Length: 284
Image 1 (cartoon, one colour):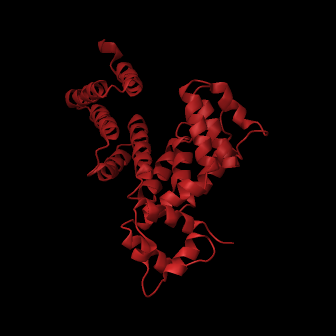
Image 2: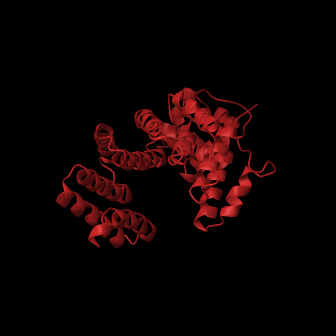
Image 3: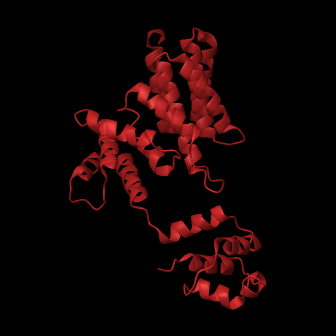
């Protein structure tokens, strides 16, 4: 079975206004490249990488383009659907995903994730202990975390017990796939680490907090990431507050809330302002 990599190469080459003559050499003739682009033959990986180098495109970029054009992902489509329905508060549609006759092919792990999402708006629906055990067993076996594993864990934060959440987060920040071209995984890892940091502060697990703060600092180094940096500022203030440094902690938390206002990020401002108000309700 021939792959469609050649078709992607042709689109990239034409998009860059480069003729086959420009990329052909003594190792790969014009006719060989032409047959590869038409899907009539294959070329070795080293030859493909040589062509990509001539086109000034990285292998990561090429594979990202190829994947986006040729492999619609059932899981990604599922996540997009859930995000859209959740944002519009069409919660009943999310519940319908647990039915057997749905459009998406949903695995047992994904059902656990969906139940965890439903739990955020309906406390009567929650994954069973066995379902959460299956999920955690799967994630603990993962040596390289991709988008799939990061999203699974991120959506089950509220239903996993704290110790399991921390240990899995620790594994994730050390072993996730990083792509320079698409930083989605890094952003998601950062957001999940921030959520775990706040959970660690809530549970007074300060040794865990120190570990997570160091990891988050590394994740945010040389990144713009205004949202993540502002949440981190708030979390650091919350951490200092819990360590009895009330003045500095409160100052950082208020500073973060002000930044969310300036960024016009109303949903995030409301979420963290509610958290702040609960902490300082006796002072208001």
